[in-house]
Image 1 (cartoon, rainbow over the protein chains, first blue to last red):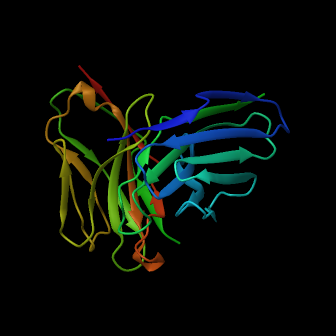
Image 2 (cartoon, rainbow over the protein chains, first blue to last red):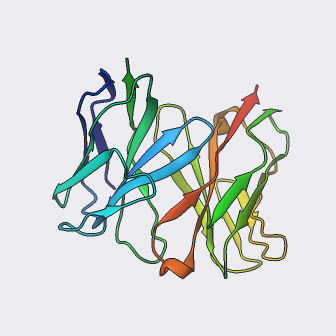
Length: 114
Length: 115
């Protein structure tokens, strides 16, 4: 078994601020993902990393940057927080990119922008 | 583009009731179809998957059958328990993108089971 750890659990920012969310996994999985979860909208893919030195944009990448520092860690940066923004950011990993492999999710970081 | 529609935003049931959550999809070819479940305070968990017409996926008493004719993958459980209260997500993976893990999720259905 393994676990995905996301820090911080809660993040409060100011409008225009640059904010960084961190994710660690000990599954030894190749592929990692960042999703945004909004009430009533499901999960939307922001960035993903197929292997350690890879970075790919998802459907919702505008306004975000990502970094795969090493195999076990994947960070997401909100480049300029938007006022009144509220969402949960979920990190996930899978053993690889192909074959519809099961994705394992962390508990999420809840963002509030004042 | 691909899309997944979950008809019910919220479902409220009593214990031992029969559950159906409707999921319909729009995609070319034969997408893989998934159900994920998210308990309060946790991330989503994989429930099961089906990859071809008439294939049944099942786990923990939940099941769904891939129906290409009606483009559906409805989630069912014969007798729900309070512990099943969670958000359920239907998702698809489009083989046209290479059979990879870029999933399209539905909006989610909140299930509340009253004891």
